[in-house]
Structure formats: structure tokens, C-alpha cells
Length: 241
Image (cartoon, rainbow, N blue to C red; front, side, top):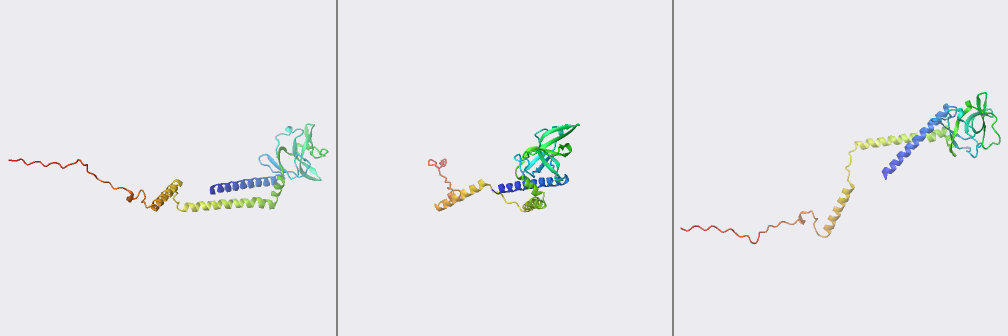
């Protein structure tokens, strides 16, 4: 049972460490890339409005992917792009409703699934961040947004990593102590059972007034018998003169 619990604790510790490292990479990656995290070409994004409801909702986490060629995009694809809203450059994720090719320049008309009209300005190749992969994690976007804050990073990343390294240090010290101590002789379970049975039988024989089977008293003495038909050899008669 102890080995099972130890294995579970080790697995949980490594899972926490891996998640912490992934989140750390995403946080630093987004900080270097204008708030857009990128992990091997995949881009996790927090949905900040309900303009695409019911496809996804505010607070969800969606996964986009970098596009290899703008020519691969077509009508009905959902893309994330940079746009200007209320004088600020922000990320937006909407569906392509039309593709325009004018003077060898491709642009896209977009609209949110929950909006009645298209977006005011077309989207060009330089504005596109990625294409939605149809992966949506409900509510997880709020968690990612919290992890990007100083409090979230400290509570959910730094503290678990510190606990993990302390736990590994504790295991290392325990191993060193066990190495220095002499190893206790291991007793096989079958040997324990055999000894218990022998002790029990010996106890029962004592109660019954009999000596144990392997004691000297229980062993029978050998008796030497002479065959009945054996007689002394006759003495030679002296010769008479």
C-alpha cells in the first residue's frame, strides 16, 4: 500500500511540475510576442467576448494554429487577427464570410457568429495570428488569464515548483540515510509461515504431554536382537592317544 501511495504522489508531483513549466513557457512567450503565446505553432487564446456565441463563449480557451499560407484560408474558417476597436489594437476571433482578391491582394471579410453585421474593416495577411483548430476548453480561459497575473503566477507556478523541489530533496536525503544504514535481513513470507506452523505444532505437543517430533526423547532407540537359532560353535575334541 505504501508503494502505491508513493507512486501516486510521485506521479502527481511530476504532473504539477510539467503543467507549471508549460504555463511558464506560455506566459513568457506571450510577454515576448505582444501578448500572443505560441507553443510549437499552437496558440492558446482566452475568449474575451460573446461575439462568437454559441461557437464559444467569453472565458473559454480556444487553440489556434499558425497558418502556412494565406491562400489556404477560405470562407467559413474561424481566424484570430489584429484589429482596431475603440482606438486600441486588440485581438479578435471571427468567422470568414467572404474572400476578396483585388489587385493581387487577398483580404477577408469577417463576422462574429453572434453579430448581425460584418466587421467594419477587412482583414489582411499581416493581421492574421492563426486559424482556430476547433478545440475549445470551456472556462479555462479565465484560469489562463489569472495565471498571467503576478498573484496567479506566484500561487500556481512558483509555490508548486518550490514544493516539488523540496519533495525531491527530501527523497534524496532519505535515500542517503538508507544507504548508510546496514540493510536489515529480509525474511521471506513462506519462511515466516513455516516458522509459525512449527511453533504452533510444538505448542500443541507440549499441551498434550508429548515431546516434539524432532527431539531426542521422541527418537526410538535401536535394539540389537540375536536370532534364536544361533548357537555357539562346538569346541574341537582333543585327540586321544
